[in-house]
Image (cartoon, rainbow, N blue to C red):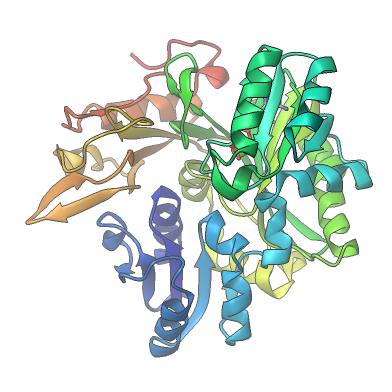
Length: 427
Ligand SMILES: Nc1ncnc2c1ncn2[C@@H]1O[C@H](COP(=O)(O)OP(=O)(O)O)[C@@H](O)[C@H]1O
Ligand SMILES: [Mg+2]
């Protein structure tokens, strides 16, 4: 079967890497992909929002299955358009992707169906906001309703700050995403990303990971798209996993069916574990990045078989089997990220760094010109290693990082610190 992956970041590289290993795949394409992805799939210069171009390409290449990576095309209905054109595609419809596309929708869904989450109010104008903020407990979490490229959440420690940020969002600082704002209770605990494949009420548990959102060691500085991850997190005991499925994932899958929004795809629950109890922070309607870069190398089962089973609604017929090893991914970014940064710096040593069979380097933003790798984005590489436990995976990942010669790049040195009980991380 010919397969197309839509997207061009580290997540899509991990998906392509996993799919390239499938005996069911004849030709693998990625639109638009990147220079690193081109090692595993044929990249075609079609943008993720070029629905007409993607459909024409699928027809030309007789694509039997499309995997949509990023959130925007899902929320915009790319899977609906592909399926209408008779092309099988993995991912939720626009009606179901609203779980990611509208935080207010998800909060209301949780309220209607008794799914544990932080208490909240929705506000559409500054007067409503002022009233709520005057009596809210601090800190207060201020969230734009819509997709905001990871810039839509602000934790305000004073009422003035909450009101200011909320006002800016309502005034359009984030475009349409902030037309409506959710003000929610601040939860204290440890965060966990949990992944399951879903088709209607069928749920196939996958695995969990922990991400590192802040740019600096010790979780300081501004938020990013993710600076590293590891899996499995020791925090996820079998009991906790049971509760996540029974209290959050399964009720959500049932609720979506009951509300005529049947969900098909991977459901990524962003959770806060509060005194041992899981609470939903948000849903994403896709694999995470960098989480995909640690989950997919641990997967022993055939990735395409699982994704196809999710689309077809036969999740009871498949199993997700995992390697015993742990995996850990260190993201390397261009200095300046998540602020402004330069493009085009030269990266050397990638081949030596990837020599160990336990190490895979996923590319989020690179180009290759006359054999020379160059950085082409903020987050650029995901250096991933498998190891007998998180500590071993961490040591191998940083050993690979240290073979990469890229003076304009940086990474956090403490990925995995929660699992290892130290903020110090690797040497
Ligand atoms: N209710 C909350 N309590 C504490 N922290 C929160 C809460 N909601 C969000 N956060 C923090 O903000 C981050 C981003 O929020 P999230 O809802 O996941 O939005 P997005 O990923 O779309 O930016 C979370 O990963 C978490 O660290
Ligand atoms: Mg999030």
